[in-house]
Length: 288
Image (cartoon, rainbow, N blue to C red; front, side, top):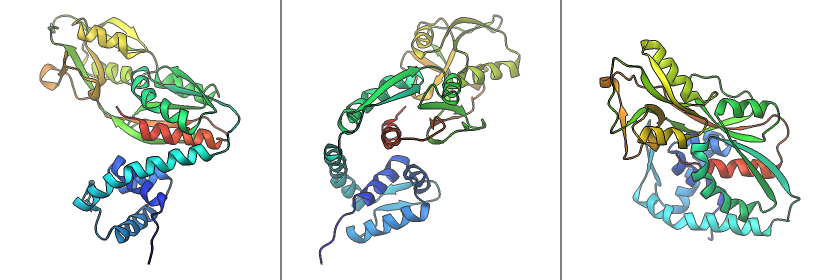
């Protein structure tokens, strides 16, 4: 008896690989956890064996699952590309997208080629700013969607949003900077509205440590230049720590900072299909 490989089953399989958990994949796909489990069972019936090994924390591929991943990744990509080419050309849609500067370069480099293939009528206007300011623009209808960085204990954005990743801010300094405990700390500060600025100032306030501003900027480029040049201490994502920086910890008097989450948030109101698809592509392509 012949069998067909449902493309939605493949989409579920690769979502689990991306997010590392069934529950997170279900949230990303807007499906119930039981539906995701059903998809996996159907795939395993077709494949003739188990694709995943699971425990309470994560999932990992079996040898069969690894072969299945290699064989299906290109198939899923080809399917989406062909389908996009067959879709009727839509009227131009202008979308205003907000994002922090430090994430914009890498994300747009991966995102824009896919937009050209899948959403050729979409006109993307990008605004870089601090997350707090971007959230305000969303609420006022000045943006259509945005990537927001928020502390784990912060109330999520009050519009439609979903978590697509997490970050761990860390204290950093250049290798040449020597910290004098008798003098105010020289700081490279994110601009107003950035949650990392708030986390840094709250941590210093809790210890009563004195500080002074060397540079303040809404973007990461100026801050990282001051840090790498040995002029200031700052807070950045652990994933952005480069070879010219060193991480500062409790042994040097710097407490661990709280983890943050990254949410993809939409402005209130109706969302056209192209905007929904753009949100899906952003979630798929976002990496720290």
